[in-house]
Length: 246
Image (tube, rainbow, N blue to C red; front, top):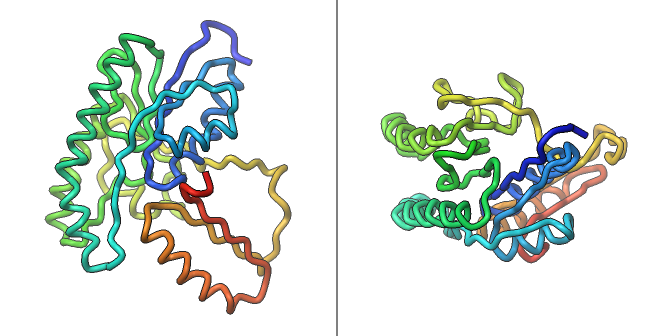
């Protein structure tokens, strides 16, 4: 355990499925193992999830982004674009929430998992994201325009953490390895709540299917993968992260 002043850190994951919450678990465990305190901010689903894993941890209520997906592929992009003005408003709201919260109950540092409004001028603030490159499907010019806006948000933080390894092979692929990186970007390695000791030995025929994300697309993908998995000859572990599971 590290000696010195005990720090108090805020960790706030995005409510885009439970993947953002689960990858914060090893960070929370590491910080607490160093003798520091962690405060979590999240919506009701995230509060239930973290409350089961860390029963004594302090959790501040904070509404999520509440992203909505379409059931139909050709309507997905228009629906996402229509939500951008509301998302910009949510980012402003969480920035105002953070400033009020820091006056009432301050912390020494902030780790924001894909929440773009949780930065502070006088508190070290980090944003963690695997999606540096946004692929809009509208062509390179549109992607470059989106990137400039995206990086403007990212550069408000002191550092950008990518939960992946640099170079290839990698987990995030092109999403986390664009040709141009935001300022002060660091690849922090893969994050998992599991350790080598807790993972059973598997063979070449073992298949893990791990799903998370907003509805209804998560369930649609689940149904498709279930159908395809019937043809796999070997052991299958199928894990679905959903609000109902929290």
